[in-house]
Amino acid sequence: QVSLVESGGGLVQPGGSLRLSCAASGSILYINNMAWYRQAPGKPRELVAISERGGSTNYADSVKGRFTISRDNAKNIVYLQMDSLKPEDTAVYYCNAEVRDTRRDLYNRWGQGTQVTVSS
Image (cartoon, rainbow, N blue to C red; front, top):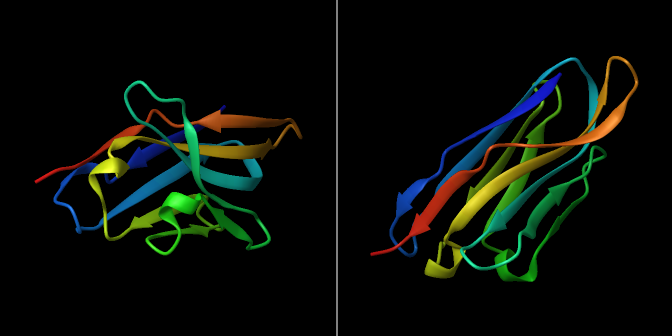
């Protein structure tokens, strides 16, 4: 079994910064894409940023220039550095990973989510 555990959410004032972490553990052979999604109340879940195993990254237009995704492949950890936060960034943030496990099965896993609230 493979699980993802997120950490780093919280309450921050507009203009502030937070760093989210997501650690994958279990019978992992390797991880392809690792991504962050978010879901605000009453809205669908949306992709925030994605990191491919080879190093490519992509961002939602709404966070370009403010958020940075990075990963440590040796430790199976993905980070999301969030700067210049705005109230509209308030949401539950979810980690997602495409995992190849030691049985050679390939599947997606989600973390439990971490709340980010941007408010004065």
